[in-house]
Image (cartoon, rainbow, N blue to C red; front, side):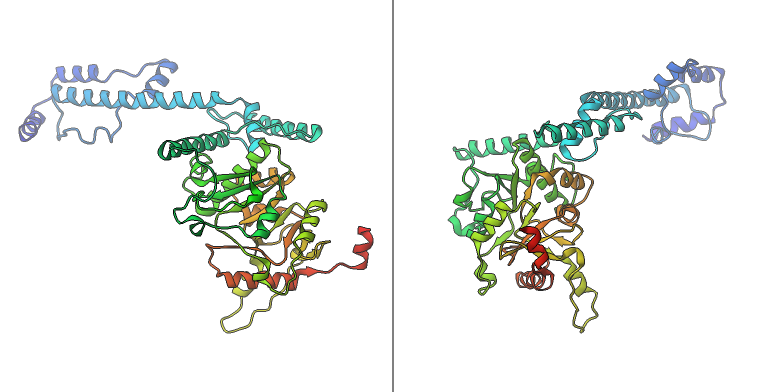
Length: 439
């Protein structure tokens, strides 16, 4: 290295020669005049960048022909590598753009409930064509009464991940994987569903369990043949939320469950998260006199509800408490949008308006007529409970609340108190005019 530096320094002190200037012109070719040739040279990055030449030997004077040849060869190698990478990126971009036509992107948007992203070159008419295709699909579904399901790439990816995971389990254990409790401790090491929760969920066409430990849940007998587990590890890499927080990841699992329900044309589904703690009604309120039969009858025969919330979190009460100075007693009041009107069932009420800040998505039943709007809201970046479910009107709430969250910044006792406050302050009894309208 020292010898090379000495040679460069010595060459720098030598006067410039015509042969050096000629070599310079030969080493660095003149830029082509045609536009196509110039674009080709730019794409292949023939001209070396200053950063690429930062490590080349330098001196105050002119370098010799040999030195410039070394630098030129290094620049050519760097340019060739850069050009190869550029061509690979162009090939990938063209391939991605050719994967889906405008119509197919529109169908994908209709399936996910969101807007399609145009691949490859951006075109002015692509978003409009995608939106028109999505509208056409929605109109055809509404007119025919049939659901046209075209598997979105995200849905297909998650299903493939699930098949690979279950195949690996079968190869390791020697038997196929089945949902349920596989703990070495038996049912004592698994989450259980209360009898009331099991009966209510069984009223829907299908039950989806959102989980990461899908082998640690005791599935009720009422759910036999109608339960599907949605493993977060299958969903996260496919729906573009691998780096998102827990709430957004879980929300995409709900979207996947709803997409699966669309595929199999269910009318109502129940979604249960693995951290849901379901309890018996008498453990929440021994004097409630819970009428499970009357509640089941109301869910089956009342066509006005869009969701049945078994678990919920009246976040508006928590906000009212947080705004009170330390040492003062909070004054709780039920917002108008959260007024819950009495139904035919003793242990249920319906919030007719949307916009009530009622959170938690640990246990709820939903009509599939609301699926598209929820998928679109979550696909736009919202979470399932803070925005998506909040936009739904005519939501039925089970009284008392029968499902609570195990992993929450509120204790179970605090959750029970808030739910009791919702029943006491937001419940609206029937009036004679309501009864006349019902008759």
